[in-house]
Image 1 (cartoon, rainbow, N blue to C red):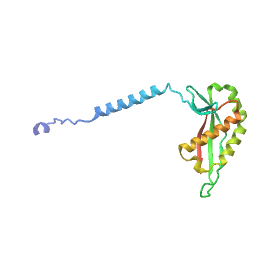
Image 2 (cartoon, rainbow, N blue to C red):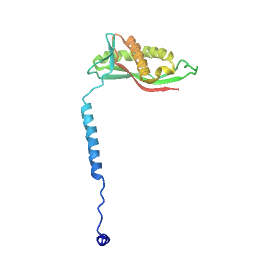
Image 3 (cartoon, one colour):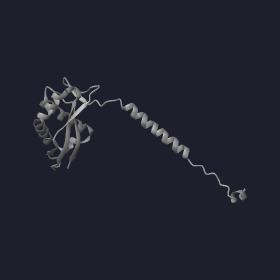
Image 4 (tube, rainbow, N blue to C red):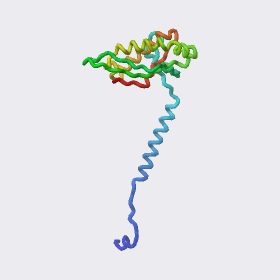
Length: 165
């Protein structure tokens, strides 16, 4: 047997290649299957309809109206330290709202910015803590936007950038 090995016969080395190929194929199948299932779903943000907050509409597509960047000094925290907030946000309008609501948000943008600025100045850095804190801040911002653009209704506030120093 050693003579055949010495004469140039090769020993067969088994590699896990077929397992690598099968696991890669399975992962790709799961990814493509999940994306094909999710592509028909639409994002339905919480909206305020008739005083009932948190209602999710089934097929709402939102048009985003960007607001100016906010640079605000927050209320002092529990230790007395003053923090600063830089935030970029947009108002999400339901697609059913139409051009009138879009024009209304754009023409009342200074009033919206003023109300949001006054609200944010009364907050401390701890108020932004966690998901629940951010949801409360966004809900209050949405309430103030809806007060300004009434009778039109915004669907959500989208915060794209938030820095607290």
